Image 1 (spheres, rainbow, N blue to C red):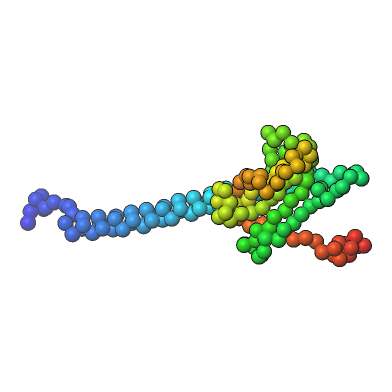
Image 2: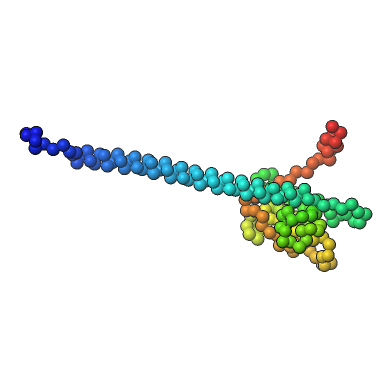
Length: 182
């Protein structure tokens, strides 16, 4: 053979082998990228849910801090804190708490009774909630209601779909006395 006539090139087998290796590497890179993107989206969704839940719980804390109990000789039974144990422990707990407060926490500044004493009721509802499972609040003004007013007829407002359990634990009065003496 004449060296001038020989051509340097690839055989068909070499080209096919190179294409196969390139395809395998491309598949591995694509699968890795897809996994990384899915993990990023999951992490972002979890972080958003935690942030939303923290914001809702901050509203609950603000509402609890604005609890109102008047210094008066009038009947005070309408102003107390109530707790209904919804049964179960986390994650299935569905307690209901209710108290009288002032301010717009949980009810919003648009409510005409935000500046006067009003009762709020916070509860977790399952599928029976008007908008599905989640944390709901109901609120109503204490004074100036018609005689036939029934708070059970007040529609609950969805605060969060992310909060699906509420487990309140009341302090044992014996422990309170122990803490007070220390």
